[in-house]
Amino acid sequence: MSSATPTPSRARRLPVAGVLRLGRPSDIWFKPALSVVVAVAPPSLILVALGRLDLAAYTMAGSLCALYAHNRPYVARARVLAGVVLGMLGGLAAALVAASLTENAVVLVTVGAVLAAVQKVLCDATRIGPPAHVILTFVSSASLFVPQTLGQVPGHLALAAAAGAWAWLVGMAPAPLRPHGPERRATAHALNATAAYAETAGDGDGDPRARSAAYAAVQAAWQTLLAAGNRPSATRRALERLVVRAEVALATPAGTDPVRLRAWARALRGTGRVPHTDEPRTDADELLGAAAERATAPRPLWSRLGPLTPIAVRTGLGCALAGYASLALGVGRPYWALVTAASIYQANITLTWSRAVQRVVGNLVGVLLFAAIAPIAHLGPLALVLCCLVCNFGAEALIGRNYWLGSVCVTPLALLVTEFPGYQPTGDLVADRVVDTLVGALVGFVAAVAVTNRRAGRRVERALAAVDHARERAARLSADPRSTPAALESARRGLAAALVDLRATADAAAGEWWQRALPQERVVLAEQAAHRTLAATVRRQGLLPDPGTSTHTEDARP
Image 1 (cartoon, rainbow, N blue to C red):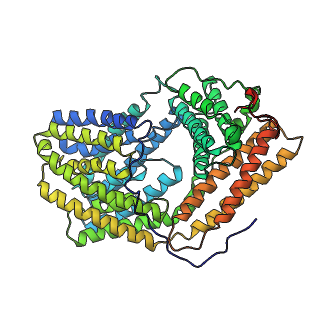
Image 2 (cartoon, rainbow, N blue to C red):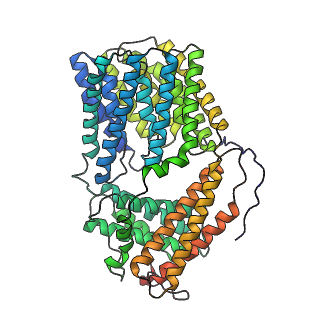
Image 3 (cartoon, rainbow, N blue to C red):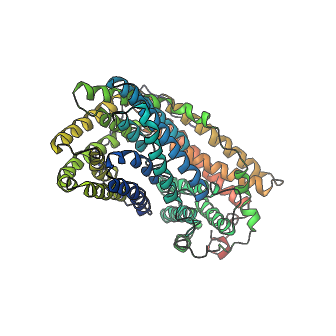
């Protein structure tokens, strides 16, 4: 296998065009949008009725946990939401205790930066998903600069915990109505992505980007199904058969009927019966790989933290420097700069640059929106809460189109929250927010460039080795007539997962600055060889006819 010759370190161009381009909204954009409104409204309105809106910042901290885990099966969602609530309470407790022990702004910024780095790494390692660490960092960082005494901390934590428990209930509320909703959506997405790839294939290999997206969607569907528990129901088994069909279609796209895949995906909407694939193989044969993967213990958390060290250093250093710079400029709320820096850090420098541009544009437009709605919010506590609810809904409804568009609503929301204890001059808030946004984005990005991720290239090498190992295993088992169906299915699934990891690792490394050239040729060749092995393994399992047999018969359609 050929390899690319390493070249000296060099800088890569940062994208400008397309950073602000709007995309399609998420299929379930309304779920987090409605959930956060339902989670925020009751605690806030109760405090309005009691005349204690000054405490709403603490209930808001717990209510915002309703934004998480909407793509998880309900068994997994219960655990994830509970973990998010506990993580939020942990960060809030650390911040409140620090605020009660010292008023030294430099110390408080340092504590906030450390918390931001820890939150970033833990969310990345556990793959919590959007909004990931940003909400947790916003809560803990803002709390650092709220006047506090040790005696008040337990009561404030109790308010946040009560709101967090309510947010947990809101997140779990759809379970009785659509118990398999997340699994059905993930399976439908895998089928649609596979159909989109098959439509580009024709008689060749198809669009590589569409193929990578399809493999990622199929892998995500498997992860969703596996997270649903160890006792699969009849519905879940039917969904697993559909994901198997998507995998088969990926192996041989030229013989795939995209119309059929899309019809299956459409049938998964709502709560109707899951369509049957009408394949001759038995359920047990098809699902042996899923059963084997359920029995495999996940990697321990500590083993996932090591590769994230550069990201942790970037986050901690960038947040601290952004906060210090804000203090040096005399801005009264350095946590805004800190949160801005924390929010821009992504998997690589290129994505971090894009997020920084989106954050700045969204915040600048957002302060104008705040200036427009501030007179309405100042009409009274109820008007203030209603404006916050509208901004919460707007942020979640729009952020899927592009991060900057969601930030247009997030910015006035953050500014409105600062007015819970009392109204403040709109001009001062707008000026401070603009300065902190620019400082946080600039200093945070400079810190990201300074802390290079030299491990990115080594992770590509390890991902290549993993694909080669998985491919050799699958090829060996395919050639062995004594191989069991369980072994073949497990090998095929393992190779598909390794391919997804290789593409994600290569894409992340390609966006880093000042590093050696990546072995792109080896990556492409490894992917091509793996796809051929996957096709051979599928034929060995009897899911496809041998080469030369007509692919237009009903039995050959995946």
